[in-house]
Amino acid sequence: MNLATLLVRAARLHPARMAVALGTAPVLDHAALARRTAALASGLRDRFGLATGDRVAILMKNHPAYLEALFACWWAGLAAVPVNAKLHAREIGYILGHSEARLCLVTDDLAETAADAARDADAAPAILAAGSKDWQSLCGGEGGEPVEIAPDDLAWLFYTSGTTGRPKGAMLTHRNLFAMTACYFMDVDRIAPGDSILHAAPLSHGSGLYVLPHMAKAATQVIPESGGFDPAEIFDLLPRHGGVTIFAAPTMVHRLAESPLAAAADTANLKTIVYGGGPMYLADCRRAMAIFGDKLAQIYGQGESPMTITALSQAHHADRAHPRHEARLASVGVAQSLVEVRIADAADRALPPDEAGEVLVRGDTVMAGYWRDPEATAEALRGGWLHTGDVGRMDGDGFLTLMDRSKDLIISGGANVYPREVEEVLLAHDEVAEVSVIGRPDPDWGETVFAFVVAKPGAAPAPEDLDRLCLERIARFKRPKGYRIVDALPKNNYGKVLKTALRERLAEEPE
Image 1 (spheres, one colour):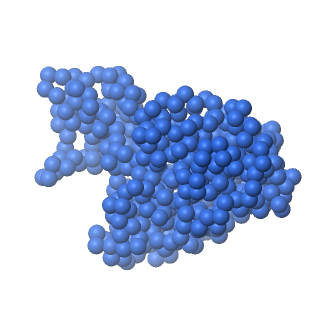
Image 2: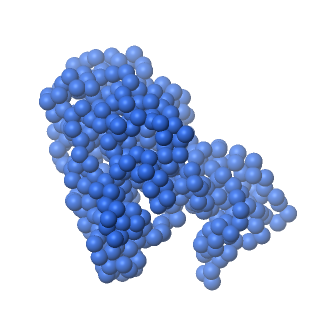
């Protein structure tokens, strides 16, 4: 049950098919990728003394070496810890220390950041850069067969932002990720050898998880030369690769559809846009369907049940004759085949159709628990169900519509921002007495971060000073895009800040 066997199988069945491309340039076929990965895996164990189950952090922007790093970890029986390359060094340092990573694999441009982060970790890991002579030497060595591991051994330690201000590591096993891969074929899309996936979203998150079903079918993993999302680059690449799938946040889909290049773009080779990671406005969905055709599929998942809670297929998107077509487009689809989804009340009792409650999930895709956090694990998985913290309702046909995010998560450009994490940073400012952070709807980003700040008596904190503090402590994308100095925050009788009232206040005011 080692995930590396997906690469082994692809290399045996389709050795000469392209496995990795950088833009339009071929990089490695499946046989070469397997050969280099096996050698790198042996090198990781021999050179760095790593043993089965050890954690290896991957701090890379999207890069061809990411595929070698990820599969080498599994080939060697190690657990991968993909880290968001946009995080601040302090945040990276926390993940390195908390995961007890023995090694950090980096692209050259992040080597210095990794070194800074490692100094903040409890036990500094070794650092190996993909462009170094050591990397190339290891990849050119001798390799063996993938290490035998158990299905429930740790494969991917997925760090997700937490409401306490510290991220939690969701433990995803080989079984979890095989089940996710199977659900992709049953509920999301078909893949054939010769198809491709264009990784415009970070490989450390959803796009990286979708490496697996595409590897299972010997598809090509296409890395844009920019390493990220650029509509012009994407439109240029589409005709140059076959059967293209893109995993995108709704804001990315919006930007693609609104691009002046979209109308004249050759999208014949665009097979599927899988969107998820945040709410898609109905108008944006219709606009994208009008431009790209019936090529959209939606997934709803969390790091704790990766990419696999519900799915809204291309067929459901295209079923315009259905009397509830518009309501279905506004939903996140139906439970994927290997999970159960229910709506429950505060006592975890199942609710009837169309009643709102918490979304609960169980199945082989649900994480084993949180790394080094038994209390949070027991709370999240009580009763054998994953408690998502999301509020939704399910209709009689099983279509789930999300109503709210009880954890106050802000999703900006597909990236998760938890308000309390930002609030704790702002509260460290000498002139700030209270603060409340919310998401402000934005047509381009989905939401932007907005902070209401109460100053201490006689003080007047300047936005630029608040910005500077945020940039010193958290990732740039988590920084508020707007500040409002207020006399007091609205609260209920128990002293809890009424964020709903703050959202209403913003909605009533012009930009």
